[in-house]
Image 1 (tube, protein in one colour):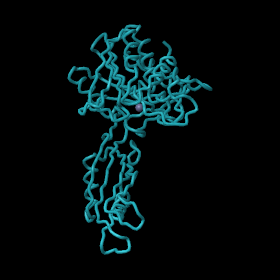
Image 2 (image 1 turned 135 degrees about the horizontal axis):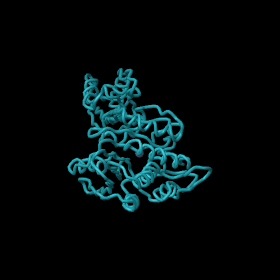
Image 3 (image 1 turned 60 degrees about the horizontal axis):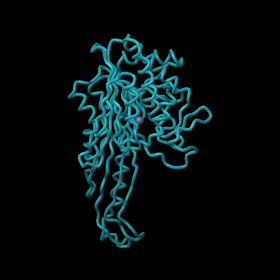
Image 4 (image 1 turned 180 degrees about the vertical axis):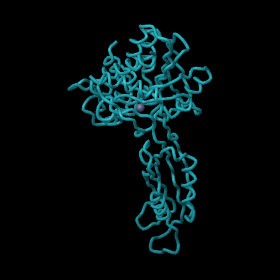
Amino acid sequence: MDVVSFCSDLIRCKSVTPEDDGAIDYISKFLSSVGFKTQILTFKSKDGNNIIKNLFAEYGTSDKKSLGFIGHSDVVPAGEHWEEDPFAAVQKDGFLYGRGVADMKGGIAAFCCAAAQFVRHHFDGTIEFFVTGDEEVGSPEGMQSLLKWAIENNRIPNYCLIGEPSSDIQLGDRIYLGHRGSLNVVINSRGQQGHSAYPVNYKNSLINLCRYIVKISDYPWKYKDSRFPETNLEATMLFTSNYAPNIVPDWSSANLNIRFGDNYTIEKLKTIIEQEAEGFDNLSFAFLSSGEAYYCDNEFLKSKLSLAIKEIVGIEPSFSAAGGTSDGRFMVHNCNVIEFGLPDSTIHQKNERVKVEDLENLRMIYLSFLKKYFE
Ligand SMILES: [Zn+2]
């Protein structure tokens, strides 16, 4: 099976979270046809609404050294105004189009094809696949549940490669060693409704809220850290209960999103958010976290992967902790991780696409990495 056909077949599965549409079975069948032991693990959300299919696959000749590959087969919704059908895997002008081609069905296809070729020859160790079905919504029944299962069943590898899109302008120019954490904050402001011509009779919840937003965004978040981009707070949404221009709203609400380096933790951020609210009337907060910041600086992984990239595409990669977070934030507490894959410039956009030649080059980089890893 060549990598472009593999990737095209995966794109044709409309696996918009929480749907799977055959994606996990497809990968599982391929891996078992080349000798992997595969297990499909289905986890259900507490409310029973989401049932997520995940894949664990393993090819082992010894316990000496193991490598895990982390990927997700789910994709975000396609949205509108595509030049091509987002689930038809159309090739045009040297590009393969499709929702999820870069994020990250191309990475899965490339690693599957590389592993299939690699295991034909003897090697001393084990390769494991962790492919999940709900990464795009925070991984509750995907990586978080699969990881619990892997710990209980003694299936944590020595190191993990995450096949998410990490490259910037061209394939091979960037490796992710970590990501900033992310915290969403919902602020509710309560006041008292009134006629805007009678200022003594009301408390304006909106003015109260806006003053707080200005104060919290002026907080000195930023600090210099060579590893992470600066910590950043953005106000992202604003609502009020109002429905007429001469009524002062009794309730207003806003959302903040904070991206932070590992000098902060979610607990520390919550404390700051609440402390800065002292002196404001009736503000309350709800917090929704998608993970702490992490950074994994492992020389062995960095050197083997950099050598493989240089050998295939002739580029010296840079190391970064930019970009949105990945399932590495869960695995990093159990083993060393590194993240490398296709260019990310079109992910989550209309006309998501990758160069066809990048898919083949990524397959060769992964194959070279496997050889160097197990040598
Ligand atoms: Zn992804």
